Structure formats: C-alpha cells, structure tokens
Amino acid sequence: MERRKFISRLGQATLLPALVNGMSFRAFSLSPLLQALSSASNEDHVLVLVQLNGGNDGLNTVIPLDQYSNLASARANILIPDTLVLSLNGYLATGLHPSMVGIQQQFNNGKISIVQGVSYPSPNFSHFRATDIWLTASDSNQTLNTGWAGRYLNYEYPNFPTGYPNTTMPDPLALQIGNTQSLALQGPSVNMGMTIKDPDNFYNLVNGIQDPSPANNYGHELTYIRQVAQQSMAYSSVITAAASNITQQSNAWPAADTNSLADQLKIVSRLIAGGLKTKIYMVNLSGFDTHSSQTDSGNNTTGRHADLLAKVSEAINAFMTDCDFLGTADRVVGMTFSEFGRRIISNGSTGTDHGAGAPMFLFGNKVQSGILGNNPVIPANATVNDNVTMQYDFRSVYATLLNQWLCVPNNDLNQIMLQNFQQLPVIQANACTVGIHEINAAAGQSLVSCYPNPFTERTSITFTSRGGHASVQVFNAEGQLVKTLANGEYNAGTYKIDYENENLPTGLYYLRLQNESLQQVKNMEVVR
Image (cartoon, rainbow, N blue to C red; front, side, top):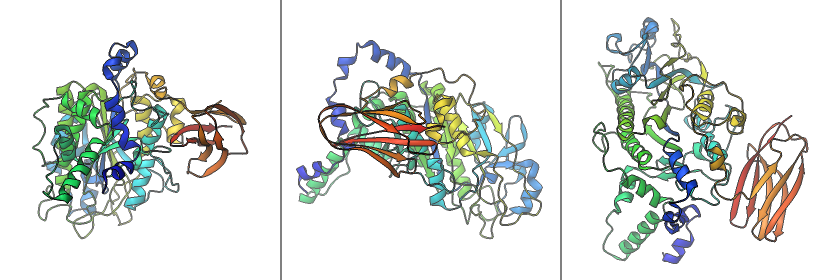
C-alpha cells in the first residue's frame, strides 16, 4: 500500500492529533480564562461506566437472606450457603457473594450504593436487543441510533467535533477501553468517544513501543502502517501526556494480566489523576451469560460466576483505593450495569437463564451509601417463568447521575433522556457545585442554531456557510428525515431560515448542517 493512499483513507477523527501537536499550549499558559478552566477541571466530575456483558445473576450477587428458604427451593444447585454470605453494615437481611470482599469493605466504609431490582417495562431477553436498550435508554419497543451518554456529551459540547480540540476542551470527551466504540457514546452525528483497543495498546502508546515486524518488504510496510495508526490515534499526544504525569499508583492493584477489568480501571485512574478533562470513561468485563456451570460441582461458592464477581470486586476496590491515593476520589463516581439479570429458578445445567431485574452498584466518595429498594420477593414455588420484579427503571439511575453528578439542569434532562424519569437518592446532596456547562457549550465555533428553542409554532434557524455546498435538515429522534430546509451552493456568510412547525408532535428533533466536509448537529425541541 502506498503511503499517500493510506493517509488519504484515514478519517477526520484520526487526523486530530495533528491539531493537538500543532497547538502551542504554552501560548495560552498565562490566559486567565485557561487558568480558571484548569482550576475548574481539578474539581470537575467524572463518570465511570462498568459494563458486565452477558447478564449478571443478581440473586447470587446481592443475596436476600430473608428469602433464603424460598431461594433454596428455587436454586439449590447454585445457591450460596447463608453462613458464607458477606454481611453489610446495617442490613441484616441482605448480603454479598463471598467473592466480593472488596465491595463489602467499600460498602461498609460508606462508599457503595446498591439499587435493587433495576430493569424497565416489558424487558427484552435477547443479548443484542437488551444491550441496545441499556446503551440508548430507549423503551423496549423503540429503536434509537444515539446513546444516552452520547446525547449528554452532545448537549455538553454541542459543536463537537468542529473546533476541537481547543483550550476549553483539549482532551477526548469520552474514553472507552475495548475493540469497538460503544453505542452508549454515539451522538446525533458522530461517536463522541475515543477508543483505546486494550491495555497493551495503551502502554505501547505511552511508551512508544510497537510489536516486532518481519524483516522483509511486507514487514517494513507493516511497521509504517503501525506507526501511522499509532500517531493518528485521536488525541494520542494528550493521552500520553496525562499518563506520563503519573509515575506511581497504589499497591492495591492486582498483578497485570490477572484481572482484565482491573487492568482497564488502572488506566482510567491514571488518566483522571494525570489531568485529562475527559467526562466519561467506559470499561467492560464479559462472561456473565452463565447458562451452565455457573458454580463448581460440590461447592457453590466457586466457579465461573464467583471468579467474575471476584474480578469486579477486586477491580472496583483497587480503583477506589487508587483514586484515594492519587487525590481524585471526590471527583469520581462509577456505575455497574448489565443488559439483564437471570431467572429466579436455576436450570439443570447448574446455571441460570435470561431474566429481568438485577441490582446495580454505584461507587465513589460522593454516593449516598446504602441499599435502595427492597429485597426481591421469591415465590414459594418458583417456576421457570418467574423473574425478579422491577423496582426501579434503569433510566432513573441515568437521569439521577446526569442531574446530581454531571450537573445537567432539570429543565434540560428531557433533551438527553427523551422522557421525564424520576430521580433516586443515590448521590449525596449538593454534589453539584461546579457549573461550567456554559463554558463547555461555547467550545468550538457554533455553525447552526435555532431560536427560540424549545418552540411551539415557529423558530428562526441561523447557519453559517464557509462557502460551497451547504444543506440544513431536520431529523426526528429515530433518525428519520423530517424536512430539508436548505440544499445548495452558499457563499461564505451567515443565513437565516424561518421554520414553521408543520404539525410535528411534541418531542426532541435534531437540526443538522453539512457544509462540504464540516457538519454540526444541534438539538431542537417541540413543545405544546
């Protein structure tokens, strides 16, 4: 492959490091605005999302001891002996799987909140569809092509990617460790996050290491391609700089390559402490689809599920300990989620099948510690169709974190969550003391807007063309084109379009501008 052709095929996002490397950050070092922003970032809030892929068995994770006799009838072949269940301060009727010692310690230290029976109406039991529902925050009968976190980031930084990186936000908006970009981070037009393939990829980036290539012509080309790929990893220079700021982490971390979730969270902790202003981090652990061999024969405290829960507990405990060690603990809240729980009754393969409600863990210094909700009620004669009943909609957890931790005003929540979900008492009061949304929203140059917004009958749309072909379109929340307002050649300048609502139903819509290679998407809302 010719080098020029290879470079020409790289997408816009992969060319962003040239902007980062080309900026003279020293030139802004004395700016009062930048100093104020840097000071604010030291107190700004970070959200860490921990995805447990496969559907975690909540009844063997958070164990309802007051339902133990009925549990013993429903799942005797996998149930944890009640004498080995880990106790939780103040909750005699509820305990944890014996593998979760780290989570137990953090709970008893007042830094864990457990939300019982989390699900949604009419749950879907397909891994793929259920995962999409959790990542997009859609109804079970609704398909969305944007993620809940992506919509939040588009709200917080509405001009992205135009004008980024900049002095207000020089860093990735979100970082995910994994092979693919999560739908959770998908915005109205672009994915709002950057991906680090795996921990090895991260440390190779930081240390400038490449895998060896064969000593032939193919090997030389492969080496070149790897160099370009590494150099063109979006925001690679700022990620490297942040990582280089931290030379020591706590000794709570397990040995490398023994716990993949811990390996990911160790990187997250390092980057937060290193100064990245990234708002959302996403990590994951797979293997929770325990249809068979969930426990070892003859010992229900060991086996696949025990190993997975031990990794989750060890990783989160090490992460929280490291945040304390590095001085970032008051800025970070984390959340675990899985696409569904498991059935109440176990199957004949020493496993459990796809179910509904399950507990979620929130962790951090600023969570309101305790257990929200009641222990699941277990029928005396459970059947294969019985599920853990929903107590809380998972979108209520999302809305709570957006409002009470990421400081989105109540009036703006519907732009992100698309519905009005009740909030839950899982974050300490007055956690939101940082108000920098207005600064973030102004980052980059705004090329399209509408006023008033929200509107009922009409609004005025303003867009800026830099010359050439420009189009302005309105889409609904499902991604369907509602109307094309402009489509043609426009000289450089600013233009206005009066837009009259043609019986559009109440809801969220997207206003999209494309001007040659530039594009921006803004929310617009119709109200009655």
